[in-house]
Structures are given as structure tokens and as C-alpha cells.
Amino acid sequence: MSSYKRDASLSKYDVFQAIADPTRRKMLKLLADKEMSIAAITECFPMTRTAVNKHLDVLFQAGLVTRQRSGKETRYKLQPEPLIKLKDWLTFFEQYWDEKLYSLRKYVEDDKGQL
Image (tube, rainbow, N blue to C red; front, side, top):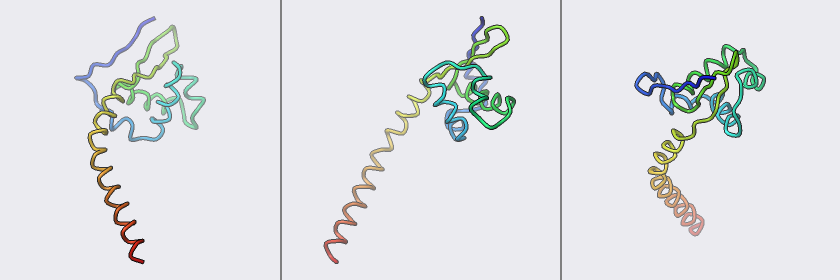
């Protein structure tokens, strides 16, 4: 049984590119609970195994999944660390969202009081 890890310097995709596609986001959810073979993943989507494999390759290159070869089967598993880094990056911008939502709430409440 051999395990494959991606080389970050050779990656063609980053996390944002990888999660931009709804199919890949669904694949990540599937893999959040368990390791799955490409055959099992393919059963969950209305597309060919080749198409599923292409999506998994993007996820692999972005560092979001690992793949492990066991005989003729390749199994995929979620690698959550890049998602944690993404969450940290998005957390920085929450301060701006909170500020804008507070301003909107204040505007709406002030507007209602003047009716």
C-alpha cells in the first residue's frame, strides 16, 4: 500500500480554486466522515469516473485530500489543514461584515422610527 502526498511547489491549484466548484465542495463533505474509494465517490455523482477523477485531482493538488493506493484501488481522505487556514483568513474579514451589518441594522431601525 503506497501513499501519495502532493508537492506544494508543483501544485496547479490553490484552495480557493478547489472549493470554487460545487461538485468539489460536495466531495469534501463526503470525505469529511470517512476515507472513500474513487468507485464509491463516483456512485454519489451523476458523472463519469473520469470526471470524478479530475475533480479529485484538483482537490489533491490543492492539498485538500490525500490519496492512497491499495492494490488496484485508490482511496481518498479529507486533509482539513488547508480549510483551517482558509477559515483563519476569512475570520479576518468578519470585522468588516459585522460593521456593515451593524450599520444596516441601525439604518433600518432609524428608518422605522421615522415612519
